[in-house]
Each structure stands twice: as C-alpha cells, then as structure tokens.
Length: 417
Image (cartoon, rainbow, N blue to C red; front, side, top):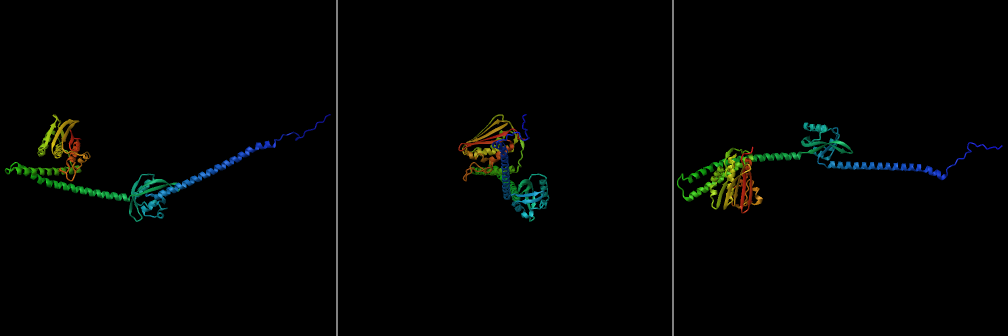
C-alpha cells in the first residue's frame, strides 16, 4: 500500500514577487506624497509672499496717503466717535493749537459755538454737505471755516474725518469787495445827483438864451443887420447843441437808473418826421447836401412813445448830416413784418468795419482821433440803440469808409408788453 506524504499547513507553494516587481508597485505612492508635500509647501510660500507684498503695498500706500494728507492746505481731523485721534499740520496752522493739544480731546471741547456745534452734529449724522461756520482759534479770535465729513484711510483702517477749510482770506476779499461796491454805488449816486442838478441849472439859462435869440430873429427889438442876424443864428444853433447834450446826459442817467418809463400814444411817422426836420432845418439846408424823403403810402400808425421815437429819429438824422460834408442824405420808409422799416442813407465819410459795433457805446465816435473834425459827445447812437430796445425795435448799420453809411431802423406797430 502506497503511503502518501501528508501536507502541512505551510507545505503549499507561494510564489513571491521578484524584487524588481515589488519596487515597481510601491514607489509611485511615496513619490506622489513627496510631490504633494512639495506643492503644498510651495503654495504656502507663495501665499506668504503675496501677503507680504500686499502688506508692503498697503504700508507704502498708507505712507503716501499720510504724506499727501500732511501736505494739504486744508485741515484734516481724524476722530473716533468724536475723540480726536490724529490731525494734519494744516489744522494746527488754522486753529493755532499744537497737535498734542488736540489729540485725545473731544471735538465738543473745540466746537464751542452754537453754529459749529450744529454743523458737527449734522456731520455726525452722516451728512456730507459742506457747512460754513466759525471756529475759535487758540487766541480766542473767531476763524471762518468750511467743514465737511469724509471717510478716509488712516494707518490701514477707514476712519471718520473732518475736512476744515480756512475761509479767512475769502471772507476778507468778500468784505473788501462789498466795501468797494458800496463806495462805487455812493460815487454813482453822487454823480447822478450832480448830473441832475447841473442839467437843470444849465437848461434854464440855455432856454432863456434861445428864447431871446428867437425874439431877435423875429425883429422884436428892431431890425438887425445881415451880419448880426447871422451871428444870432450861430448863437442859437450852438445853444441848441448844448441843450441836446444836456438832454442826452439826462436820458443816459435815466437809462442807468432804469427810471425811463414809456408814455404810449398813437402817432403817424410822417408827422413825427416833419417835426424833426423842422428842428434840423439849418442842418438840412446846409450847402452841398441834398436831402430826400420817400415814405410809402399807407404806412400804419405806430402805438409807441412819441418822445423816444422823435429823439431816435433826430439823433440818426443829425448824425447823418454831421458826417456828410457834401453829397446826399436819403430817408425811406416801408412796411415790414408788423412794423415800419426806416432807412437813413448818407454818402458821408463812413465808419471803419472794426468800429461798427463800438459806435453804439456811450462817448464813442467813428472818428476818435485827437484831431477829429466833428463835434459831439458820442451819446447819440448809444441812446438810439437803448430807446429802440425800449420801443421793441431794432437797428442795423452798414458802412464803407469814404462812401457812406446806411442805418436801418425797424419800429413795431405796437409797444412790447
């Protein structure tokens, strides 16, 4: 009988991996752990470096901002619920207090005036509007200031701040300006009173001279020789020029004071022109100048101020004759756009293009040289322009030196409301 050998518990064959195969299966996990640890360490270092860079940037930014605050001309007060924690140099200049005297003090110890206290309370409530008030300086004198609340960066944290602007210089300039305006107003009042008084004092004797000149020309005191009559006419003409000047000054004063009112009435332009031509008879009959008037039939009547209309026509016509030594002056009138367009055309000396606007300014003439040939104060065209504005009309001028000028005046049928 064949005996078989019994197998023990460890008699089974077990195949073990080769050394090279075992190393191949265990090495990747260790490598991965090492790589993971290296990556984590690198990421941590990057994070630390980034935080350091951010902290450094914040410190640099805070330093720059602090330097900027220190250079401001406006005062800056940083506070924590009303307790001052820091100030910039400008606030010490404005208040007169040293920094050590302000820091860790309550703003309420400083804002002692009622207006300043109210402004502070509004800022504490979140109002960012600017308030003007007064702040007591260290020496007790009031300092006019403007204050407003802001949230600003202060040593790495956002804090409440009060921006303080010194208004002393501005207030001083405003007071000086006010004094200057009051002085100018007083000087203007004195000037107007002088003009009014002197105008009255001048007009009275001048009217008497004209009255006696008219009596002489009418032979009331007997016949006069031809030379005497010529002298009286010259005297009357010169006196009339003086009265016109005085009247222009009175009108100018009224325009400056806005005292000129309108006296409306219904007038016919042809009739007003007849009166103006009668007053300018000597100018119109001047040798060497031909005068022509051409008004369209059926011109509408004007509801206007006849006094200002008459003064306007007289100034424009007399101006045309004065600056036309020889040639012609023509007046035409046509209905246009709800009114009447009146054109006064002359062949006189003309006005340079650069002076066409200036001739409507007071005391300006087209000929402003020291040796100018033509008299007058330069008020006529200025008054014409101002009167036309009151009447609702317009004026335009075209001119060529050496060939003449054309003044176009438009009068509305009705006064503006």
